[in-house]
Image (cartoon, rainbow, N blue to C red):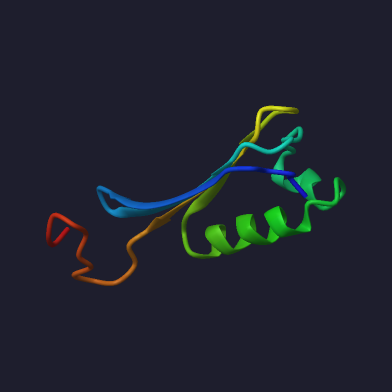
Amino acid sequence: HADARRLEVTVHFRSRELVLAVVDDGKGFQPSADNELADDGHLGLLGMAERAHLLGGHLEVRSAAGEGTLVEATLPFSTPGARGPSGPP
């Protein structure tokens, strides 16, 4: 849908969170509030936002026409003793 030529996927740890980001250089769009996503036909984004929320996290979408898109999911570590790159929490 984006007509992107470049796509970057990153996964990293921040404090007690996992952050997954996808950035493209596609045509972009005008992001909507979560309650407007379905009305605007962005069912995939709505599903991602709902799943992130169910896991105690959140989804951020930044985009603009002609500027590409960033979709970033931030999810908390949910298991006791979870380890990030620097050791125990």
